[in-house]
Image 1 (tube, rainbow, N blue to C red):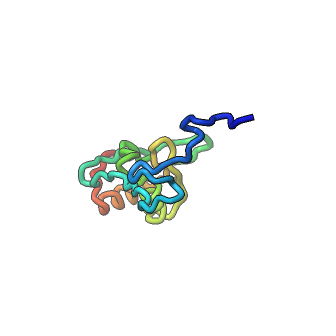
Image 2: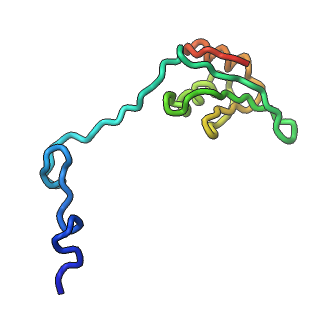
Image 3: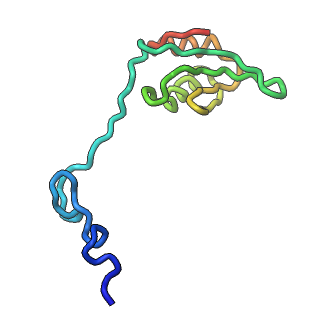
Length: 116
């Protein structure tokens, strides 16, 4: 019995798109994907204070482009500056507690425009 995919593209070893050699013999450097980042000066962050169940307050920072920003790194900087915990959910940075003033001053120091 012959091979199942004999003579089809699945039977042939994969080749490099740039040099045409089999991938096992290819010497091309791996492609570097650098995400395009937007400068902070061109963006406006919207800050608001939300009250959650059981009386908990959360500072929410929204309206930042998730593709043009490293929201996880920005959230880490804001959490360190405010001395609180937080997370990034659906493109919104959430800080535990009422930290509007501290978050606003930290964002302005980085270069973002802010709006409450």
